Length: 421
Image (cartoon, rainbow, N blue to C red; front, side):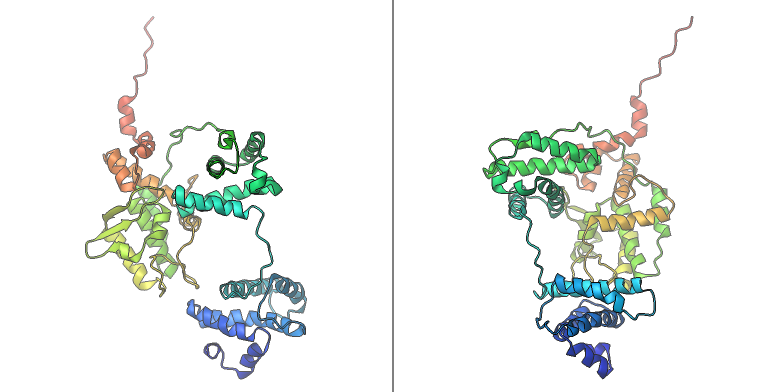
């Protein structure tokens, strides 16, 4: 049995198995070991859960082989006053809560967790819209996630009206009122995201005959200029400074160094690095394939010596043993691919700040802007830059013409001299 790998003491084993959660804890122990948790981590989780087991044992009426939020709430209300932990009670309760949350994750996979929370009233409308976006607009998973976040705020603002019947009563004035109130406390990127979400949602509603008028036209247009900003990226010296500052003595350092090396060398998006699979590195031909992102193009590039060495160092010395096809995984069990771009950008930003570099935006995209700027300075054409970056349209690369200072000098008008008196 799995628990014998964790404890040898018969008394402890009997205590864990005798309580109401005995069978569930046995399966949870198996699950933790399969996920790659160390014996010490498994021991800590089970020790913390023994307190929940004791709590349920004292409840004579609890016989079910399922757990729900009500039981957990009662446990955390009672446990802090009963805890006899010698250290900080607050820290101990926080660690117990962490173990219980991990246990709930396991229970949900086993359909043993009862969550009585009803689906929101807008769930059918939201799910139908996402399905339409997926099949008719071929939206990427990341786009669907952003659209869901934006529309959830709109649905919550609508309240009981966020149903198929309620939408028929929706007026253009309401749409405008919501968007203008939302835009007052949101940045440019947030406004654009909400604008796109609302317009595509109302196009879906018109397509499905849920509304009778073009409400997408009621979403205000906030004037912005596509090429109004100057790209702010890391120059080569700054990028090398970030790379030198990453300590590669631990697995997380080896992983982070390989990720930053990819961003610096190829200027790819953070999402493309997260999605990179083991079979997309062709060691025999010294090539690496980055799949398309944001409706762009797949890009196959030479595998440089620096990138190859950093990848081999990570794969041989730091990558956990895992069946996942993605190259980069979390460094703690349960091992899985990096799930969001925000996680990767936060990691990059941490290393950029540690190097003493201050930029308005220091995430993964700073390396992409820096890469394009360096290519332009080396004399590469915009077509070449667009191809390497995976842009489907050449116009996307026009942003970088504003940092081609040599070309700008050539088109600058001479300063008019004053006529002599």
